[in-house]
Image (tube, rainbow, N blue to C red):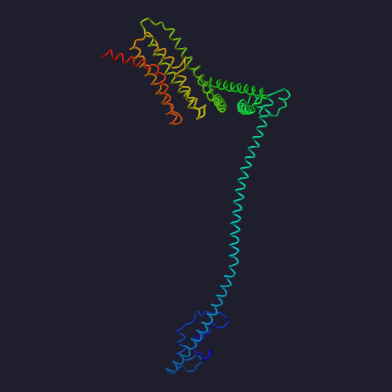
Length: 430
């Protein structure tokens, strides 16, 4: 085989030199096959003659092919060696990755364990927080019980020296005339606590608690009435309305729902309906009616005036109830007002209807006619009141149902007589 130095083509020499030496492949971007073929077929660069015959040219190509085949074997061997080296390096690389992978799995397991511990710690913290809250609640309860017991002892055997030197907040609040709202709440707690004790040694304290309870309720009701009186006379300001609301709230919190509702309605009746009734009676007594006149006509006029007055009262007081009483209590207060203006034995609609329809000298036809007119007027009043706007549709439905019941009660006592008279009149007509 001819050596590389005897090769006549520089391009072939360049190609055969690739991948030889230094253990690394070299890149020859300027290599050209056409130039190599020209160099192999043409004269050499040293001036000697080139192949002169076809056999010489064939021998030249055969030599070049053999050199290229031998070079391919060398390159293949190097590639095999490189592949082995790559596999060794890859194996070492994978071996080197095993430790980090193990470390990663270890870290992941430790993180899971840490998360589990954190979850347990969080759960423990919640449990501890709940227990601390219970302990704090019990501590406050114990402190409150201690204060209640101390206040009961002070009420049980008060002395001037003890009272002056006492630092018990409950006791000092009870004796402070400017804190009657707070005092009423304290009295409720003291009353319940004293009932649980039920000891003869605290009998004086129990009596004092009931006395204070009565006195505070009376004071709050009086404050409520004073503020309401300003409203009923049309001279109330925002402070009066706030006083009504605050006094009502304290009494309602104390469980005096019926008491404050009755006081509110009684004040309305006393200020509005009693004066109206006195006016009607004075007007009736001033009239000198002849014997042939019909008293029922005047009473019907009075009923007309009374229904108009009742409508005005209810409309104005519904607005006051909405402003003074909480939403949960307002419907029952409105119903107490309606029931009282309808059935008050002295000034309500029922008492006036009894005077109007209870005359013995009234004929059957006159009775039926008067009853019809009175019923029509009361129906108009009920429809008018039922149309007043309230907070919710449910409250409006409740009020209309209640008004229907009151209307039935007003005229329920006349149903039997009315039916009997109608039957008699029908019998006379046929």
